[in-house]
Every structure is written in structure tokens, then in C-alpha cells.
Length: 303
Image (cartoon, rainbow, N blue to C red; front, side, top):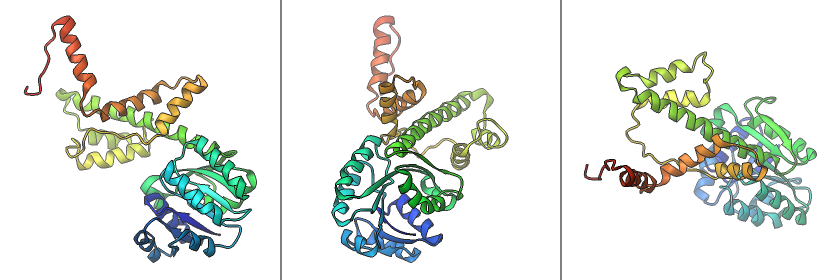
């Protein structure tokens, strides 16, 4: 097949490379010429303007967007939309809110352009290992995209799924990331408990490595944990700040809207919020309140 990938960041650029390696013709476009040029040695055909992208593809065109979710993706899609024609397909591979993808699809109908939302998982390892793909869209659209999905996935028949109509792909990716929040939080709490049991002097890197083999909690996340703990088990150079990229918030809101209990995912999100409070007001507030009602000692910043 041939397609354009718009947005050659870490994910988009590696996806372009993987598809080129598997025989597809990929036209690459990004906001800067230097970024586009970076992928030319890998066989990506360069395009430096949206018009050049449209001219480089034969109808029906497939234009796959890999910009950050929200305004960057929306602006890019509708910058390209007037250059496309009826029957072309726009694929939104950003981590967009599923309702935004539904809205994009409705707007693109004005141009006769078809739409698919594809949640993409795999991070920086996807180039080598393949990506997990959750696709939403009409069956004929997904059928047209199937050669791309099969070659982006770990194997042609595993790691990708047509979840349902437009919006379903990003809905599944949203829930996937909510689960990811909770799993990461559970690992973090467990290793903190191991580390704090000072009288046992537990080698947490060794435990992580042992758990990778034969245990119920083995996973790819645990493989990554074992890797970085071998390098620095105290994580001395890492600030205690954990960003949340949006999907956890959307998942928590969805749980409320559906009346579906999701306490672990929601609590994991709140723990990320807690790490982002650089002033630590809640902890200082609690310490002072304990002092007020019970006379408990309060530590000051000077010790």
C-alpha cells in the first residue's frame, strides 16, 4: 500500500520506518523540514507541504495523523481536509478523546472523506516489536487499512483488533491506558514496600529479575522495571513527579458517567496528581491538623 504519515515524532517516525521495511510506500510530513529529512535515509518519501502530501498519493488516499491529541491533531486534520477528495481515508492515531474522534468523523463527512480512529500502544519499542492497535471505523474502511494494521502489529494475526464503529478504537485505548495507570501504581507500591523493609536489606533489582520468570505478576512492565533497577535501584536522578497525559482522567470521568466503579484506576490517577503538587500542601495541611487536635510534632523545613 501507500499512505502518508503526518507527524514524524517518536511514534509516527518509527511507524513510518516499520511500514517501509515491510514494503509499503510511506510519504512523510511533519511541521519542520528537518524532521522530515531525518527519515529520508530510512526510505520515507519526503513531503514538505500538505499540498505535496496530497499530490504524492493516488486516490483513494490514506493520510494517517500522529500528532499530539487535541488542538494539534484537530488543526492538522482540517488543514488537510480541503485537499482530499471523496473516498479518501483519514486515520487518527493520536491518543485522542474518543468523542473528539467521533466529532472529526462527522466534520469530515462534509468532504466525503472517510475516517478511522486507531489507538496505538507500544511506545519506543514498537519499531522492533510491533504495535498494539485498536481500530474504530466502518468495516470497509478497516478492511482497506488491514494491510497496514497487519504490518504494524507484532504479527499479522495478533496485536490488532477492529473494536467497533468510529470512536470505539480510541475508547478501547482510553481504557487500556487507565488499566496501565493502575498496574504501574501497583508495581510502584509493591517495590516501595520491599525497599522500606530495611532489616531484610532486600535487593529489589534481584527480586524484579526473579519475578520475571514463572510468577503471576510477570509482564512487559516488569521486564522494564528489572532493567532500570539494575542500573540504579535508588533512582537517584529521577524527580518524584509523574505526569498524566489525559487518558486516565477520561477513563475516570467515563466510569462516573456510566456509574461503573473503577476505584483502582481512579486512585492511580489521583496518586499522579499528588506527585505533581510540588508544594506538598496536602501533606503539610495534614501534619498541621494532627498537631492541632492531638499535639503531634510537626517537622519543619529546617529539620
